[in-house]
Length: 480
Image (cartoon, rainbow, N blue to C red; front, side, top):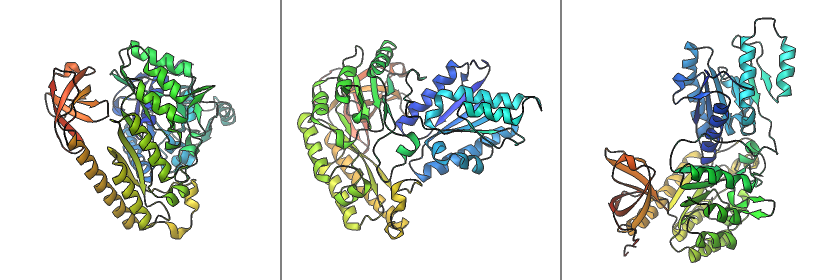
């Protein structure tokens, strides 16, 4: 199916790296179907809001955003507004009821059929009255896995594409990536874990892995286009296996692709951090000295009730194993506070874990109830008072920032390789990241974006370094 070349589309993405990758995927699918991708919703005929469902706040933000977009639609009734991604999958037709100006809701497994869905909607809108019976249109839509809602609306029908497909791993589909030195490469969709707080398995389905050959072909193609940094993406990326090829071997092969200087991966599950993975991280020079290790909590009872499949003790063993093999490793984590039933003492255990491990960075959250997840069925009395939950989060953030600041201050004086990603906030300033994923700003020419430099870390603001470019590639460690 080929769409009119004049049609213009805009994709606006919220959420995690996987959502960013999905946004690029939708843009690629639409562009190859004849759409012109634009950078502003005001210029688009089709506006897609690509969403996250991890926390309630994210969903409220999206509902507010589509309400704003409806202002554009009032002036241009022919505009199509679609909500895609995890929130669309979770809310389904309910979202269409809450936001009747939305024309399409589509879950993550529907993207391959996005052009056909848009074509169905546009054809029905343009059809003269009586040219096609509602029954025929409904039958045709169902054949393509589309649920039709509100067929009798003055504006036309609303369409919902929400079927989960265990065979859909986006094989053969290419993303539309912006020019730059870095690229996300999804290798896995969905998740087989059933952490009791998490909505992901219910909106993305079970784990689906891409062919290793296809992943490597994509990475080689990116390298030929000038990409030098690759991030492998998956919900539990290190559980990946294709036929008899496990994740550590895929990581090794990606790291050895000509032209690739840096390889990262996210988000791994602690249970699958093993000796084979650590050996690849220690021996392959392209694999960055960085590991995201989502602990979620620092108390065994809480971890068991979260169904995380490891204990605090085994998590600490993983940390020791990684640091023994890669002494310069930078560790980051995810932490949830105020999980239902978490006592103050158990929360204190989490703070103790933070102080013991000393993560370089932490993404911190208070528990957000997600309908459909097992945690919602816990006894009502287990749920933490919102004020107490907020107080715990504030204390966790304070501890995390203190540790991060201490670590970064100890690194002032180091000379680090920096991949220049874009201009800094101030004129004449560049911003980039080290191999250990530390942000550095320093003076330089914007024409050098995408290239590498070496910078001496002169001072830190806590999370960011201010540096000075140096000629030498020598790397030094500051005395603490």
